[in-house]
Structures are given as C-alpha cells and as structure tokens.
Image 1 (cartoon, rainbow, N blue to C red):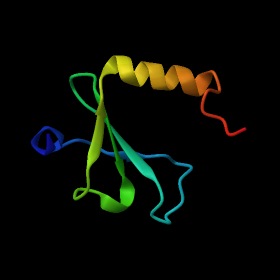
Image 2 (tube, rainbow, N blue to C red; image 1 turned 90 degrees about the vertical axis):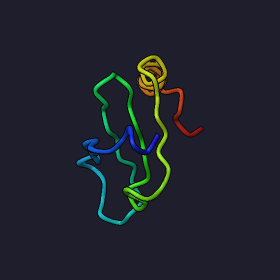
Image 3 (cartoon, one colour; image 1 turned 180 degrees about the vertical axis):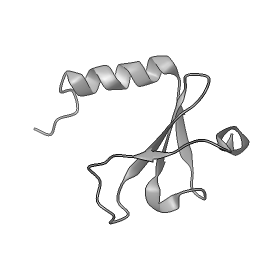
Image 4 (cartoon, helix red, strand yellow; image 1 turned 30 degrees about the vertical axis):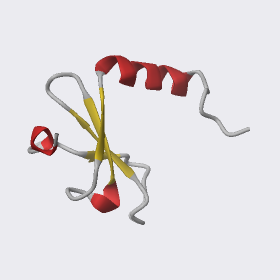
Length: 69
C-alpha cells in the first residue's frame, strides 16, 4: 500500500495549527482518499477510503452525525 501513496500530494486544513495534531488528506488519481496523521508524515500508517466510503463520511459530517453531545 505504501508504494501506492508515493507521490501523493498531501494537504492539511488551512484551519490547522502547527502543533502536530492534525490530519492530512491526499486525493488519489483513482478517486480514493488517503488520510494520515501529520506528525507521522511519510513514516506512519495511512487510511485509504474508497470513493463510496468517503462520500458516506462527508454525508455524515454534513448531517452532524459526528457532533459531540
């Protein structure tokens, strides 16, 4: 899997601080989305989501599914 992410362009939110507690995303050419912890950039694990999984996550965010009580 790591070879699939070679050359990926990682992005961090413009709202994130430089405190090492952020996630980075890479939108891959085949429609998948990779996510990793910014402090482990290049060395740690990454989660890779299919387009359908990412769409479900975005929908949950828009619907407030992940808000704290």
